[in-house]
Length: 560
Image (cartoon, rainbow, N blue to C red):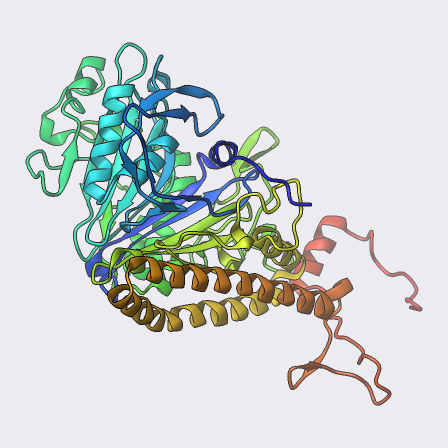
């Protein structure tokens, strides 16, 4: 039985589930192979169900209002006026190819609460998507809303893109006694990429470059009033004043940005110590002096597949590689069950926090393309569960309905559904955790085939939709894209279910069944051939004997 939930209840639940646990990368037109802009987003939480929600475009009568509920708790915060017309939104992308992602960084605790504030960070994103035709307009909508109605959340980083520009905006409230927020927004230079992951990243910024930098008029003076800054304006650092980086901010958060940068840019090894949580400070303002740059230029331009792979990282090939320490177990599992920190003999230790993590509810790569009509140009490449073992399906921003596999109410975190992509993908990923190094190869191969097919089909789908758009109108094009997106996502989910059936047959009970010419082998009598039984690697046996001594030692020979 499928349990249905209201859209408001869904949004409340999603919001409470994934704050403090997200990763974003931002790619400009000049840094992509085809001239598209891209942002990424992973919504990571142990209580988040992955599904794709949809807001249709709508007209509203004069005097209409909109209720605002806190994204994290569902608490009713207040009412704001509604605009005359709101735009359609698929996930985190609207019909004009504007996309928004976020990560929460917290910042100074005294700024977390503001009495009578109405706008929290989640509401800012989705209201802005329904009211904005460009990234700059989204920034204007969001900042005017907090000025007028107050800012209810703690510190937040936003990724905001349209077909031509990509911006990072960082915001933190003013705390009690003063309405609104202080903020800075910077346009990522063309040809460069950026990223953020639960740590404020904007430091100093140009004060007289309105084309590339916007900020609240009191972003510096407010810090002076509070006694947090007394230097020259040009030396002011947003992050170092409002959200200084510490061990956790570097090791658990900035390390993810470093890992993504490291995949596409040489020379990132000089920031390894910083990624490990070793934060150095200057002697003048006590600002962090060895932190990552806000943006970098990739060695080569990035395709949408490259950007998907940036979201699939466990620090492989670095000092933080999660497949290499003993915590990975005998099968190199790059995940650690929580908590993130742990204690032995009163000494605190930590697990790594990678971009790819087991508790992801959903993630996406948005792609905005200026040379196509808006309903066709925007693609939200959407996936559920762990980014390393998901598939990103193309959801065009002009679609008017979501696929059954991603539909709101098709199962939930406590209700299994055979047709829910979230449950199907979790079934596969959780099974691979049992013998990860062997099974993940099948997953990655199938993932590559499916995503490769989607990417290869895209030019033809674009061309057909554009022809329909020109000859029969936008609605015909949107209907075509809706049918395509729905069919491909549902078919992908069916194929992934078949992958689980294959893995279950091949790897059941710790055995590995033999295959020949793409089929499971049988003996001359038609029965299953005796399976391989590879056991554990030698180093694992040595680790066992080192910790147990003679407990498992065979004495006098073993007869079985």
